Image (cartoon, rainbow, N blue to C red; front, top):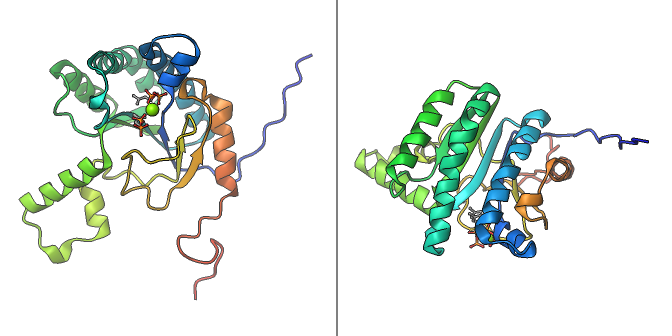
Length: 245
Ligand code: IPE
Ligand code: IPE
Ligand code: MG
């Protein structure tokens, strides 16, 4: 008999979930496979997590796919990761577009191979008017690099120092126009930020899952959202229900 468990209702849905998709290498090792097989499995997994996010009503999903520090990995792994992204864009773009997903890239395009840059630009252009979910792909992304780039642009534009505010800085970041993440999920049990959204995460809730990314499925995402619903986001106040006085 098919006795499916009744699903818990969410009390709160994060508008923006950001995920540090970690543990592909350990997943591969646990299966006796090369690291790149772990990255491929991780990429496959993204499809169902993305679908689940759309279904749950999440509006922004940011995924950490390649950090500015990941260039330090063995050449073959870096090359493999680049080819995987290119391949994913090629295979998935039409479907993502049909589903109303808007693609954004956060990070630097410089340093990527021209074919990949073209594919990223074309994907952004094709999906720019889609409204169902914004998928920000953090690729060749580093939070410190992002802040350094923002400062450089602000100085180049000779901004009046008195106009500099937190909001203005936000406009110069790669994430301009995207609300700060409400929930940051990191898979594989690691408890560190690894240079991800260091400005934007000021008041994000954290959820660490011990599951390696290729096994982090819809139910795991559901658990993360349920846990988010239990958090009291105080933003420095004594309670999120505090009456303003
Ligand atoms: C995350 O998985 C994917 C990338 C960083 C590209 P890892 O490759 O970091 O997996 P582990 O941490 O070695 O298990
Ligand atoms: C963070 O994971 C980057 C991505 C998931 C793309 P890493 O595996 O590179 O992080 P560290 O090196 O363990 O901090
Ligand atoms: Mg890792």
